[in-house]
Amino acid sequence: MYVDPVQRLRSARRRLAEPVESMAQTAAQHATELVIDALDVNALLDRTDVDRLLGHIDVNRLLDRVDVERLIARVDVAALLDRVDVNGLADRVDVDALVRRTELGAIIARSSTTMFSEGIDLVRSQAVGLDELLARWVSRLLRRGAYDRRPRAPGPVSPQAGR
Amino acid sequence: MTAGPRDQPGLRGNFAGFVSRFVAYVADSGVSTGVFMLALAAASYAASVLTGHPINWSRGSPLIVIAFACWEFLYYAYSWSANGKTFGMALLGVQVVGKDGDAAGARRAVVRTLAFPLSFLLCGLGFAGILTGRDRRALHDVIAGTAVVYTWDARAARLRFLARDEQAR
Image 1 (cartoon, one colour):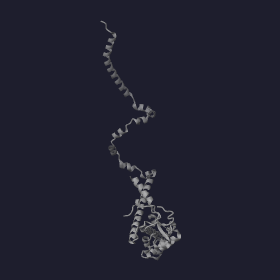
Image 2: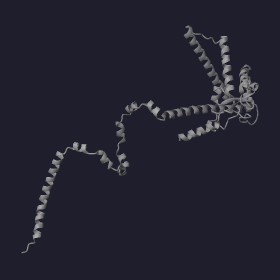
Image 3: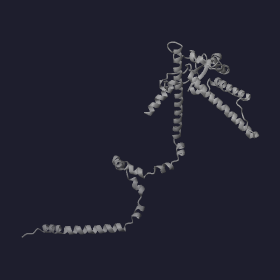
Image 4: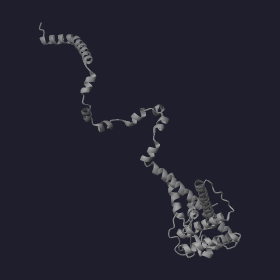
């Protein structure tokens, strides 16, 4: 009976493969644990050039891959706000300095001017309205007929006319 | 019901009515009297600092009456001759001009100031012309050859209101 030597070898390899593989895995696991135990991570980090590492990172490409909407959806804003001490934060704000450094002062001044101007416009318009009303009554009392609205003064009136 | 600023047509150069002029006069009376009282208080304080005795001003004192009359004359005459308007008139947007529409000038301002009390002394009848006359001139206006016109640009005010409305939306 002829026995193929190659076939025998194949059979022997199949039988040995499993225990050898298991032994190799166990050995690798032990070796890894030993390496990790022996490794000083802090020393490794000290030796790492973080700037150079960051230099290799393409931040824009990274950001393109970030799903911001999904990220925001995962943030619990209410819980976040609960943890913020708004009053404490407000106490720490130097409002005077803020007004000095920003356009807030100008905005406040502009707003005050607008309010003043609005008030003046209102007073004047009310007075003019009453002028008209009174003139109409007088015109009716004197039986003048159709009321001539605000007759104009002749000539070049009020060269410095303004508000 | 009076018209709001958004309903006013352009007023500049039109003869001013009674209410605008009266309110301006009330404002002027308040300001001029207030300034005079402050001046008296300041004088009394200065006297108390210098002599140790404050001055007690009496309203009926001829000196006070004369000083007040002089101050009022100065207040109105100077304001009208300088730019045709007092503080109250500037507030209400009215101005004194010559009857032809030119600047009032110093002479007319002085005559108007001197004639102004006459309108009161005739039981207020001097002001009737503002209500009944076509050019709305009071007795002191007729004597001084002046008129009072609106200098307020109602159209600009209307545009400001519209702009504010637009911003508020």
